[in-house]
View 1 (cartoon, helix red, strand yellow):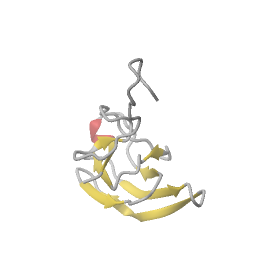
View 2 (cartoon, one colour; view 1 turned 180 degrees about the horizontal axis):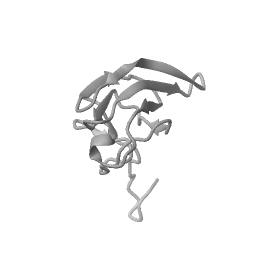
View 3 (cartoon, helix red, strand yellow; view 1 turned 90 degrees about the vertical axis):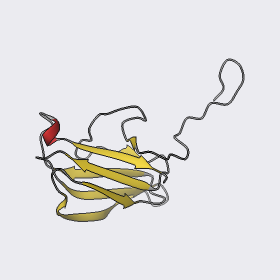
Length: 116
């Protein structure tokens, strides 16, 4: 991709030092159950839950196999008001199963990705 001045413009996140939201680098939007999010080849998945939300399953997708696989599963995997970081080297997409109805921030879950 080129700009009008002819310089290359990167379309992925590259190497990130701080977590970026899966909905876009400058987004603060929350994650939805069963929605597929591209990982942009980042190394770590950061999962943050509001006080009344939990994550019970994380699934990863690899283009090389064309299949979704369960990465982690527990009840709850990430509890309310908790943040956990998972190493997801090489995964192309991520999706979660979660509780909470998104009606307010206490019932939301956020997913972020980073290289470091």
